[in-house]
Length: 267
Length: 267
Image (cartoon, rainbow over all chains, first blue to last red; front, side, top):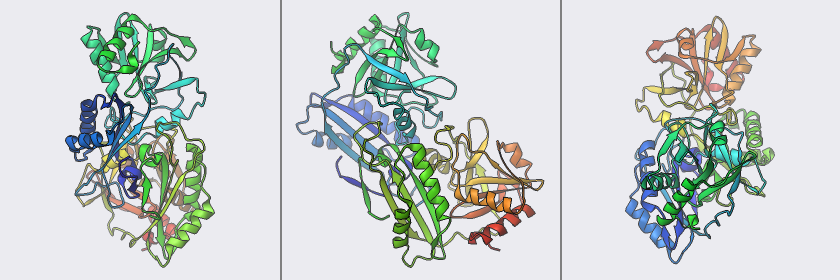
């Protein structure tokens, strides 16, 4: 990160009072940068944090990028320093952190990934739904449920038994030529790759439905896959003992994403 | 805080992956220190963070205390630094921050405080219920709902309409000589002053019930009050337009707390 440390009084640490973005650097560019910055700005608006200057962030990312061809950029915006207590500081001087890490793109799993269900529930709160906030303890606890490296991801349910997302990914499945994904009105992160996937499908004329999803729906699905800004698409080979194979619809979508620059979806 | 800054990669900032304690310093001592350190240790155990050495923290607090007679001590424990991603680092080297701030004790409001209901819901998750974690965005958003300095606190409800707590306090009411307080199985922080209040009541032979509480219950209450480690007890003079006066039971409890060292409850 640019700047190695932050003051301990920063509300990002005290309360998780902020947001972050994790961006794939591919072939020397921040992929879907406009979408990431737009989500960050929308999140700041919802939390009442002054919206950062996107041109400034883009310039900082550009400086850090240097000769990095492949890696991960991270942006954190917090409500900044303030006196003790939840009340928002006036004036508010947000903290902005921008970082860059070299890393090879994840190798797309040849036959898809193995996935489990997590016991840790994801809680519902419409005020925070969709946002990538710094409050991520539920994801941390869900991810702590397994250490088996053969399991790539865990799916999280809310208290109503609805399957919402993976710990670090969005969830899709296909059924009778339709692409389906959990709605995110009450919880979950509105992923940039989720949006790109929906757009790719729509361009291909594939019907997309955002809806409530339960475990039975996934049992009846033709296939299941996960999306995330860094991994692109991960087809699910096995979920809780059930095996899946990529549907033709999913293969089409992955080719569409590849054309949009998601190199992980190349064949 | 001891140490002015933390590395930006600390999971306390990235994910709110940690816990904190806010302790009243009164007459040169950390009040209810044993209870605070016990709650911190129990919280670490539940989150799977190595439990810090309480004697070391107590020693660090003692050093910082110096000649401070009145103030606020704060302890933050996070899961420490780790590689990107929710997966827990192995080994885990927790970050421990201990700080001290001079401050006069809050003056007990002569006639009680004015309180409102917040629209921001508190979400339910049994895995985090009771803990004072660094994930506090709901409290931040609830506290942002009002700026009127005449309003001292806002009460938060869950999605079932149950009143759980204030943004920074626990809730009590009395009815027919019984002390009642919301149960905290699904959300809310298990406050140190809440526990001290329950113990003070039990010593006085007052029946205490932890139960689900709704707004109607508070309308029917003889009186309502709030507790917090720094403020002691705040009798509620007005909640959402309804006025209350301290019941004899509450006055007894406040005298009991004063005898336990909660000087804010002195008359």
